[in-house]
Structures are given as structure tokens and as C-alpha cells.
Length: 314
Length: 200
Image (cartoon, chains in turn brown, green):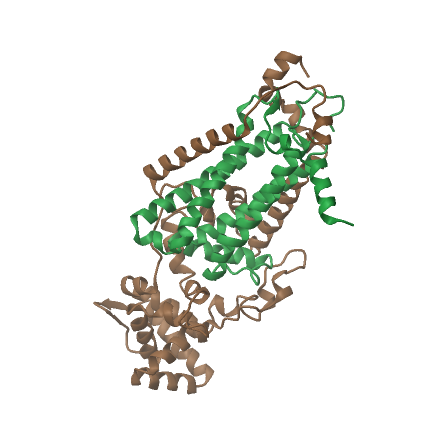
């Protein structure tokens, strides 16, 4: 044994032991348990939510999402770092906003990237979309805003007939053509591809824009039905009756506290508390009071009961 | 200075064959609590084995293959047993005050390993490439962005999540688990409370 082990175990009797045998027995036990659990319960595989599915089943919700992006007033338009140059929107705590340190590293312009670029691609094969896009881009900001606002307001009273969304007559300019173009792209199943399109085509390892597109109300609706929203213990859940990432419960628990969960800077508050919690855990052996708990609780008397029985009380 | 000689001396002084592959143990090691570490290691072994199979066929395979889904299920339940093992191991060691005798480093390395494993688990959820991963990646990105990590680790970048999950994070986990075990074997299992004059 090492000198340290010799010193530590001085005066302690030893017994025969077979490390490999014990390890193999425990491994075999673990394998059996895992195989049985996998065979009995499988694993969850709830399909992804796609733009195609939403555009077909909930076209009005889809168009509201697109018109929000087109308006240039979506939350995503001014998210802050690492996506947009809005440092004022980075979450801060005690005057420090860590997201601003590295700034914008994944630039995203929701209006352009989520709507205008896919439409520009569609315009190459659709003269009507090309004309509408030209008219929209040539118009003054006030005019564009008015068209989009009128269209968005009208969506609240839209009627869905078959595959088409009917709006009351109004001053929408070229917006309906653009919106129907976005509806067509999504229904054809091309939207995610258009959003992921970039310098690495045909490779698409980075799905940032496609995954981000449906965030917000639409994903919240799905998550709400599956009990996966932040106020429902969020990402600690899996779909279905699976245990999920229960090891994140201390993290998701903090979001259940209204004062934290409802705060604008909830994420950084939770992040800071978890960082502190982690540091306390690491240095727990050196922290007075905390490192004395085992002596008071005396669970060790059960763990080493054979030793105390044979060698007297501690 | 002969580096090899120094390395030999270091190993001889700190890790004998009886430390590395013990055939005798102190008599106080009789509780089932001592098996939780081995349970965690076994689940880690299963995670690596099933993970290698999933890696060979790619992240989308398990959606289209019944066998692939079963391998994914093994991987999923291995992760559950892995974290359960860590939790039980940690609780056991806490109530044993197993950091006594200068062993606080072992505890600290264990907690660091847990922290890395949590991130590894997160990237695993994101790599399921289904609704769970879609939702978790979106939620996690806000959390990482808020603390300033989102610029470096983009949960919506599936390529980055893949490389982190199958290479970088497992390497760190295995490395720290290795350090953890080496320290444990070098220092011997902690004695029962009260069996030595000075515990601290």
C-alpha cells in the first residue's frame, strides 16, 4: 500500500476482498436493471413540432407568428446578446450583465432571417411574391408598419376555409401575398431548410434559426399541454410518464418561487444561486456547521454499525 | 533529470498494486453504501457502451430503427441509474463525513464530476432530436445566454451539442472520475467516525 494508506489504516484489521469480482457483480446487477427498465418502459420520443404541422393545423397562429416577425417588433428582434445589439435587454444582476461581455456572436435579425430571406428564395420561382416583396421593401417604414398592423389585427377575426385563411377587406398592401407565401413554404415543408440555409449548405449542423422560429406562443402551447413550461418544473420533465432530468430539480425548483420565476431576470438569478450552490457543495467539507451535520445526524452509526458493534461506540 | 525515473518514483510512492487492485479491505467496509460508487461506475460503463452504438449509427438512427430505439432506451435508463448512483453515493459519503483526513479533494472532484455530468445530460436531452430536445434547447439557451455562456455554447447548434456530448464532456467526466478513483485508492477508505484520535 501507499505510505498514505498505511498511515490511514494503521491499527485497522483487514479482511479478504476481490475488487474485480465485486465490480463485475455490481456491473451485472446494473445491466440487468437497465435492460429490464428499457424493455419494460422504453424511452420517450414525442415528435418535434414543425412549421409544416403548425401551418397546416393552426394557420392563424402560424401567420400571427410570421406577422410578428415581419413587423420588426417581435421579442426576438431586440432579444439582446448574443443575437442582437440590444445590450439593455441582457439579463443583469447587481449591475452586471454577463451576456454583454462577449456581445453579439450569433447575429439574428428576426425580420430578415425568419421572413424576408425565405421569401426572397420563394420570389425566385414566384413572380407574385417577387412583386409583393419589391413593393413591401420599397415602401416607407410607416406604410409597412401600417400594412402589417392592419393585417395582424385582421388575423384575430380571420376565417379558415380549407387551406386558405380569409381576412376581411382592408388596407394590407402586399402583406397577404407575403404571408401566403410563408404559409406555402411552411406547408410544403421547406421552411426549416430555408431558415437553416447558410454558407455551409448542403450541410446543416447549426439549427439555431429553425429551432428558434417556433419559439414563443406556439411552443408554449405544446409545452403547456405536456406540463413542461417553466412554472411546471420545465426542463426537468420528459414527455409522458418518464422520470426526465430529475437531477435538475434543484434548478427548476427555483423557478417555482414566484419572486424569482416571475422576475424579468429570472434566468440570471437562478444561474447565480446555482453557481453559489455548486460552490458550497464543492467546499462543503471546509464550511463550518455544514461539515458538522453528519456528526449530529449520526447516520454513520448505521453505515458502520458492524464496526461500532465489534469495536465499541464512537 | 530523468523524467521517466521521476514518474516511476511518483507512482511507486503513491499507488501500489494493492492500492490499484486491492485483495484486502479494512473490516469496517461492510455496508451496501460502499457499492453506490460501483453502481455509478457501472451505469457510466453502460452509458459509454450504448453511447458508442448510438454514435456509430448517428443521432437520427433511433427514430427509424426498433433496435436503435432499444439502444436509446438503454442509454436513457443508464443515465437515470447513473445520476441515481451519484446521488446515493454523494449522500452516503456526506453522512460518513468522508472528507475527513484530508480527503476533501476527493469530495470536491466528485462534485465537479457531477457538474460536468449534468451538462453532459443536458446535451444528451438536446440530442434526442425530438420535441423534448426542441423544447429543452430553447429553454436552456435563455438560461445560458443570461449567464453569458450562450455566446460560447449554443444549445440550438446541433453540431456543437453532438460533439460536446459524444466527445468533450464524456472525456471530462471520465478524466475526473479517474482522478476521483485514483485519489480514493491512494488515500484508502475513510475510517469510521471516532475510530481515530483526530478526524479532521
